[in-house]
Amino acid sequence: MIPSRNLEKDSSAAKGNNSTMFAIPWDNFLQLVHRSHHDCFLAVFRFYSNLYLGNANTARYAIARLSRPSANGGSMLTTVAETSPLGQQEPINMIISANSDSAVLKDASTDAGLGGGLQTYFNSLGFAGECLGNHLGNDQQANLGDGNGLVNQTGVLRWDFGDVQTGTCKETVDGGNHFRYWIQNESSAIFIAASYELPASSNHDIIVNGYNFGRDYISGNITGSAIPTQTLSNSSTFSGTTSFNGFNYSTSIQYVSGLLPNTSVGINHNLTVALDGQTAVDGLVAVLTVNITASNSSSTGGGSSASTGNSGALSLSTPVLQSLAMAGLLAFYATL
Image (tube, rainbow, N blue to C red; front, side, top):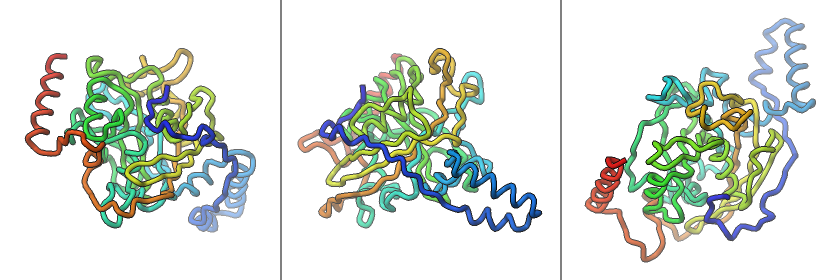
């Protein structure tokens, strides 16, 4: 069942788009002229063989305008503190392409000049910032191969149960879908590590197949229909529309292999996440390209996603109320 509040979606929104564009990696080509004629011929042959014989991932990365982290010492696996055993990692399994509208790539809400920014897009997917703006738990780190090395997550978004102000407090306690994100320095692409977690009483362990489900539930919120996790491949494509606060978004989704390993080795919670006979991570990354199709020209308010809620809802924006609510949440954790 898809945890989505976008119930008005047209069920026909999930559409396939099998067309593939190709881009010549000119920087790499120029380097070839410095090699021997033999090496040059082989390198060009391999590239075009992969391109036209079905391995179009290299071209897809170029079209998506993202730099493959592993090409520059990075990884599509995060660094997680205090795992047991030590050194376990979690998959970065979604990317918002740098070919998306520039406003979507701005880590903001609806400030002047940044209408329909990243946070508003996240709201349209049914996610909001952490409970009352307070972060619990350890940060994860990622090296996106952009020259910055390991950096802490930019933020954490949680399923908001239809309430951007306080709904993520329910997710923090009861569990559900959530994700961490990072912004690649050189491309501005957004890298997302999604997973579906158990309640706080179960220490927020990940549900069975929870990394793949976490990714696909987000895709399902976009399309308004279930994503067939077990039959996905690197040729799977979908599309759909979402909206929030007067902004409408059209998103195309391309599942890509070759960025993320298909493995259980070293994956956090791998003993309980992996399905029998399958790996904890299926090796697919959902690459999203997002366009704003309608905007709220009257929107001038900035601030966090929690500042925009249902009319008549109790506002918890004051420091006193935030402190009281946070104290109650911490008291709950103390009883677990």
